[in-house]
Image 1 (cartoon, rainbow, N blue to C red):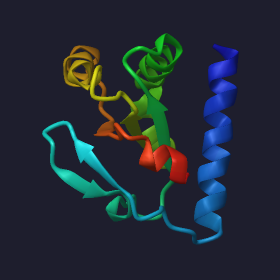
Image 2 (image 1 turned 45 degrees about the vertical axis):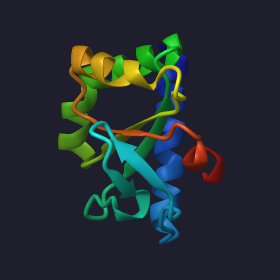
Image 3 (image 1 turned 180 degrees about the vertical axis):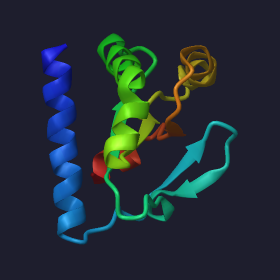
Image 4 (image 1 turned 135 degrees about the horizontal axis):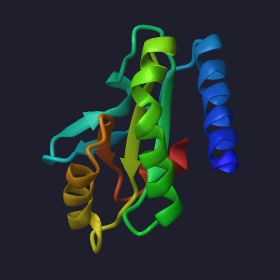
Length: 123
C-alpha cells in the first residue's frame, strides 16, 4: 500500500511538473471502450492535474492500484480537481476482458485502450 501511495505521488508530481511547464500531451490516438478513436491531446481538466495510469487486465498490481485509488478518488477530486485516466495496454488477445472488468470494478475514471502501446511508448 505504501508503495502504491508513493507511486501515485510520483505520478502526481510528474503531472504537476508537466502542467507547470505548459507542456501538452502528445498527439496519439487511443480508443474508448466503445471503439471510438480519441486523440489524447483533446483531454482537458481546466488546468487541474491529470494522472495517466497504464494498466492491463492480466496485471494484478495494476488492478489493485486502481481499485485502491477508486476508494479515495472522490475525495481527491474534491481536494485537487485531479482527473485520472486509466489506459489499458491489453493487446488483441486480452482486450475483450477490459470492458467487463471495468464494469465490475465500478471505476469512475475515463478508460481508454492503447493495444499497440503507442501512447505508452510516446510518453
